[in-house]
Amino acid sequence: MKARNYREVKGAPYTRKKFIHGVPQPKIAKFSMGNPSGDYGYRISLISLERAQIRHNALEAARVAANRYLEEKVGEKNYHLHVPLYPHIVLRENKMIFGAHADRLSDGMKKAFGKPIGTASRVEPNQPVIVIELNQDAIDVARESLRRGASKLPTKSRIIIEKNMD
Image (cartoon, rainbow, N blue to C red; front, side, top):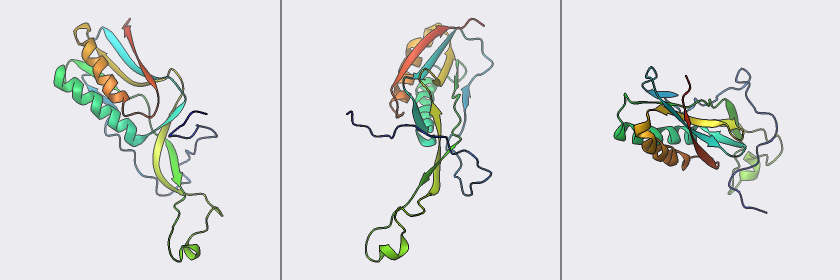
């Protein structure tokens, strides 16, 4: 059996924030960067190759890494970077207490529902995680920026380049 850092994604997502108190806000500051009104010839996408759950801080780290490299090499007005995912799934953790007299404070696995600790978004195979639109002269820069962003994500991914037909 192959070793894994993350659990298999299964079951219904826990999303009803109306009934959940104390859900932390997602760390993603912006979902769209650069110049969204530009006329671009190419679309380069970072797509997930497997079903996974990506936490909000991993999405933000990937966005920052990709955007920083693009902004530095191409300039802010020459691309449009978009993150199509929104982390709406609430993650819970049942904190365990160890040490002296912990048996009086902790119930162990009895009533182990957990408290909200963060949010995540689920991705399916071939679903885009980050999309960049730009012109042909900056394709290699965009590919490198997505490679840097992909290293922050907990899933295998691939970069796809396609010509805009808009």
